Amino acid sequence: AEAIGDLIASETEIQRKQATEIFKGSVNKKFNLIREKLIKNLSLIEANIDFPDEGLPNNILLSVKKDILKVKKVLQDVLDDGRIGERIREGFKIVITGPPNTGKSSLINFLSRRQVSIISSVPGTTRDIMQSNLDFDGYPISLFDTAGIRKSKNTIERKGIKLALKK
Image (tube, rainbow, N blue to C red; front, side):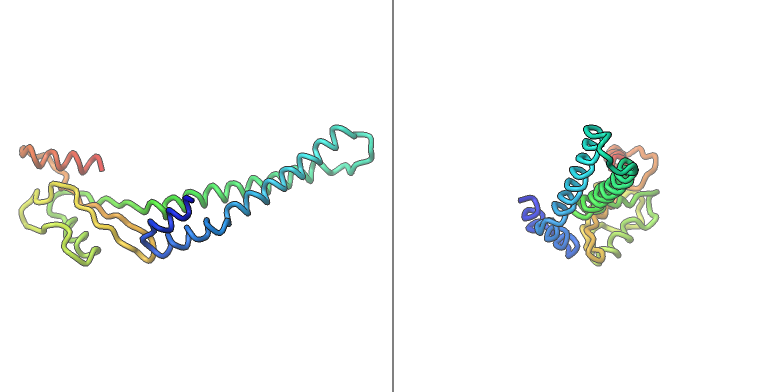
């Protein structure tokens, strides 16, 4: 159900591919293989404990240890991939910040290929956080233009600077 929701909400090709793979059960297949390996190794350990004098190979526990280390590596890869998957699903968030009149608004406008922020030679023009969502080679990116960071006596500009620092 989550995969279908992700597919519906996808905005980029990479998000669509990820949702489709999850829907097909690729992660589920990995977990089933891990489960089977763990059950097999558990049974070998139990056999070694329950029947120590039955002539089982001496290297069973060494074999189990190697197999468990492989399972650990696969699990770590799945967890790492999950972080990447989450980033693809949620998108990358990039905050453009710095002193006033350094080109932050010009940069977001250029990258967005449209006017997102007002550009002016007057310092402190941008006060609210301006957002532009982009598809960057299939990856969802949210760009945020912020107020220039400086000390200001203007109450409204100080609020914008506070928002920028928080973002």
